Image: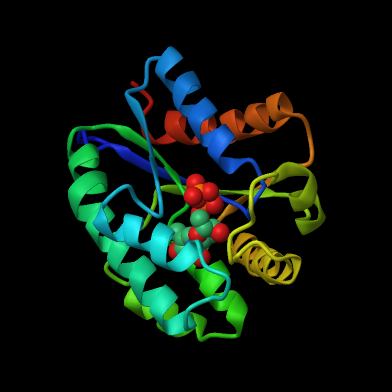
Length: 204
Ligand code: TYD
C-alpha cells in the first residue's frame, strides 16, 4: 500500500468462540508492536446497534429474518460511515468484532436467501482480511453463563458454523482453530495478521 489509508480486519465466529477476547487482545498486541490499532464491534455502539441489542437480541423469539437482516445492514452502513471510514482515513488498523459475514452466516442460517443478504450489504466496504475462529457449538454451554440470546441455540449455531466453514472454503475467511488455549489461539491469529500486515505495509 502506498497511501496512508488504514487496514480493516474482521474477526468472526459463533457465539462463545472467544472472538471478543481475541479481538481485544489482538488490538493490545498490535499497539505494543507499534501499530495504531483500534477495536470496534457489530452490532455497533450507535443508535441502530442499540436498537438491535434491545429489540432483537433480548427477546424470547426471533423477529422475522427479513427484519433482522435489514436492521443489521442499516447498522453496518451507519457504522461504516460514522466509525470505520473515518478511522481508515486516519490510517488506523481496525479490528472489527463481527462484520458482514455474521449477516451471511446468522441470517443465512434460517434458510434465507444469502444472495439477498449480500445484495442489501453491497454498499458495505470489503474488509482487507477476515478471520474465522472455529469452535464446536457444543462448547457454548461451558462458555456462556449469562442468559442466552435468541441466537444462542445449538441448532442455530450449528447452521451458522456450516455457513462460516463454507465462507472459509471459498477463501472469504481464514480459518483459525479455536479449541486451544487463549494464548495458542492468540498466537495463531497474530501469525496470520502480522504476515498480512507485513505484506501490505512493509514499513509499518
Ligand atoms: P455478539 O458478538 O455476541 O455481541 P455481544 O458483544 O453483544 O455478545 O453479537 C450479537 C449477536 O448478533 C450474535 O448472536 C450474532 C448476531 N449477529 C447477527 O445475527 N447478524 C449480524 O450481522 C451481526 C453483526 C450479529
